[in-house]
Length: 299
Ligand code: GLN
Image (tube, rainbow, N blue to C red; front, side, top):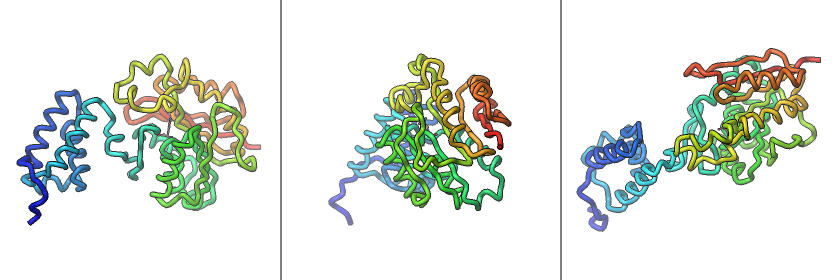
């Protein structure tokens, strides 16, 4: 018997019930799911395993730790920062408040990449650049899906790059990704003037004045640098388009995520620059224009 471990009288079942009520009262929509995820995090079990032991009691220490996490969530800190990870493309990525939390709609960039590249490219040494890599999701999933690819991932912040490197090691693709500090708003200077078959980016695209109207989870916790796209939200695209043109191979593709209502403007930036063809817009699951892709003309 572990007499030294002080037990409380609160069981998993009781705690869950109480927490669901607290989270709901604080405006958290998926209160049950979040309560389960937080509790399984503290108990270090899978969420599915919680229901196997509904009567199991928490130690005082576990209950206290759990209470602190629930308080953080009630203050609208994003669940992903509290848990320390988030899934993207069915892989788990470590996240921290320095990086944007991966969004499901960003998977559209990977889907577009796979469809433009075609199945044969999966085994070829394609060159891929991820601009503003954040947690590293696009670079890392590209390296996982294209087993011979060499990937370059850039971000303005060294701290962010450390998180991305950790994620690359976790998914065993660190040896094929070159992480570099670079400001996407400047002229891109890449080692040995390397050129790429695909350039991917999910840049900051929220118009500055809209930031304060975002949900508190985002506004108060996610990095401004990953969200703010300047007065009309399009600043990054104005820098990405000419720079990407210079470092795309002929026939290579640029694939970017865009914000609500920005697809036509981004298309225009591509048209005005010239040298791009097959400019296409892809919608996300909710029917909004989300991805713009364009090929650099051949020859
Ligand atoms: N590329 C990362 C993502 O898609 C980071 C994007 C960003 O910080 N704007 O999540």
